[in-house]
Length: 264
Ligand code: PEP
Ligand code: MN
Image (cartoon, rainbow, N blue to C red):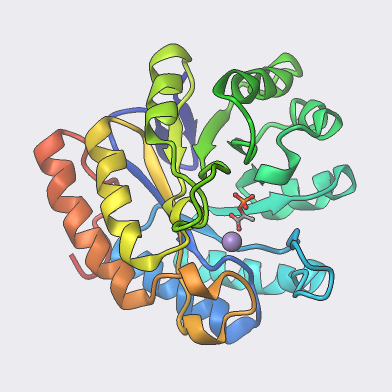
């Protein structure tokens, strides 16, 4: 079923673009990223508030200190906002500040969290677990749906395989398989799916051409200074360039981008 929310129809005719920094780091970084993705025509702004990092000494996100920055970015750009939930205890506060809640790869199997998100009334972007079979991913979505929330968007973000040249192995075929067998919109995250900026525009184009419903990409005003996932972040210029190409491809494929962007 399409997810109609915040003026968007995800899973409908248009191709949806979600973009922004991996993590919100400070007001300047968030505002620069937000303005740039809005100008290039993104539909949804992303930004991590709570980060689940592999190393405990890595930046864990600003937590509640990011809330005022989110409010400013939302009001200045008028974009809906997406962020990741990492604990059941965050549900109330995040429903209040976010328009889309993301379940990250590490929590796809957190059935208590999924059941709790079945009770909220905003869309859930459910990432595929890094070792999850597509059937398990669909079943995870069913946990949310059974609670009464039918606004679910699946997001392929790459899986673990023997291959280490890319950060993960982006399973576009698996994403398309799910798209053709479930009624849910399916989007792709080529940032985590590849870990390599030079591969992201190509994989986003493949996603669009394959008939999938959108992409989520990480954008940072200065990737070399990023506190998380800088190595895979697109610069604001690289993102704008990718959007120009996706716009053309979208017209050719009958999957137009939704927002013209202020520079179009
Ligand atoms: C993210 O989108 O920043 C993220 C943590 O993604 P994943 O859960 O796919 O690693
Ligand atoms: Mn990230």
